[in-house]
Length: 243
Image 1 (cartoon, rainbow, N blue to C red):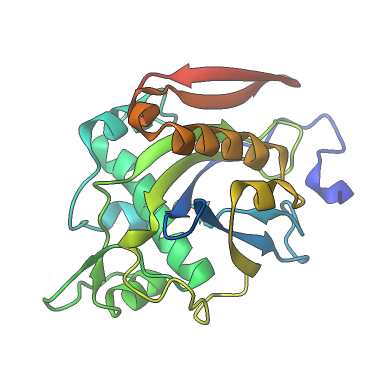
Image 2 (cartoon, rainbow, N blue to C red; image 1 turned 180 degrees about the horizontal axis):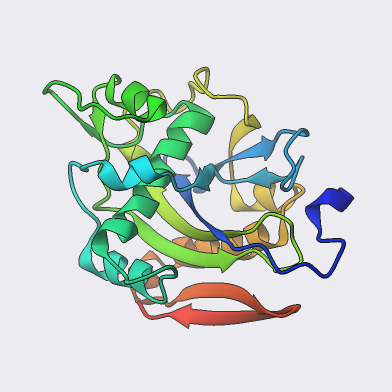
């Protein structure tokens, strides 16, 4: 690990920034496969680690109108203990929209519903590029599978919501990642077993276990509480968000 990833003095902990991740699952093989990639070596946060596509929430995300909204249970889960003011559905929606945008940016894959009308416009270049693919975000089948806040001893911290979505929502060729930004390298569809053999951040490994539990018993998935992992000082806490 790079020393710059950790606080070296007694300065106050960095405030976590909102972030979101999308775990896409394929069911067209003998075993479910998930999309993961390797973070570029030049990243200051978790370089060379394998992760799911995702990144920070942008202000533009809250201004995007999806084709279909989040389900009420997922909205409620996202608003549970929402930091930074009064919880709102608009902010909850922005997390899922950020996951769609970041997935498009990092992988080149277009996740959403086909749009036959004129594409909307945004001040954000990546949203404009997404809309030009003839797509609108469809959040209706996303499920929240975890939430995690980076430990306070890190120099970069994120309050990340992890979503799971089916690869059938990909409008583009799911094997064509030629439009990826290069932030994630070595993009592959992996079985859970294959993913476990990679160099993973601890939180990614924990979320992977939750994803596996949901895939093994899909009938019970929507009744599972959502793990919420954060820290009190240097001590990790695993709480739960009600299903």
